[in-house]
Image (cartoon, rainbow, N blue to C red; front, side, top):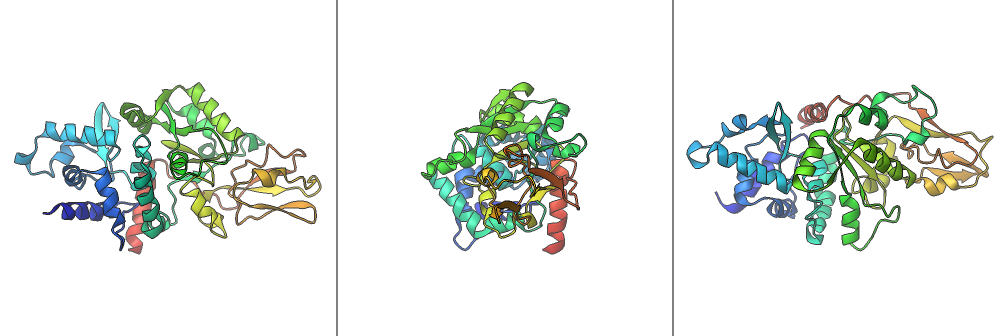
Length: 360
């Protein structure tokens, strides 16, 4: 098998994952794989599943004389440090899996991102990956309201309350640079929303992967909550994994975020973004000061007859407009139809894969 064939086999293998890795006419997807994987690593990756599996199961797929179990273990360890393999620890044993490109391998390149690689990623997203990311209608990320926008106990479900999620999580916890803002700076367009760079939070097994690989720094629960508070003050949009037990919490802006910036371009982002809330304005209290308009990143607010109005097709329920309204004219409201996230990230991917298989 030629070197090109090895990478094409890996592309086909990754494309069968819940969030696939489709081919393009330009072949930029192969260029990305060559940046990430050596030919030997590409062959190994084709033996992994998107579901976490123990070394013994993965090793059973190999031609035994060519690689020993210990050699495979070492290779997977090195591949995890490069951000091309994910792992979690079950009863003291590492279980390995193929991560998707996004959210996954791309974000894991935060310490080795180059301008050329970012240009290839941008090209690939435009040519094929954006459609693949959205094709099933079940998103990997969801928007949840900031703490200051929650006005009463019991108003927000547990899975939409980050503080409650964090309270139940034992750790470890990690904070890392936002790769989207790092990419924007490489392209000469630094973030216009915040000067903060350590804004991405990982929890549990993903936090352990980040810590072990040197992609971020370990933090305790109090530090995590303080970082979250600062992110909210900056008006960043909170986007954890679309699961009741997330392993990653993004704090996003529409000027840098590769996902959110593209979704903002749609006329009705709410048809695509997973969110359970929307902003509502009391016209009797609104003075038309436009403070909320300056705060809103989705261009969901505008003044009509000297009163602010909400475009519910654009409002994603982040809640950032609520605490800054000087007359308290804005409140968050629950949507009539509530999205209940799958319990775990694995459950989310099973749901995406099921829909993908039915429509392919």
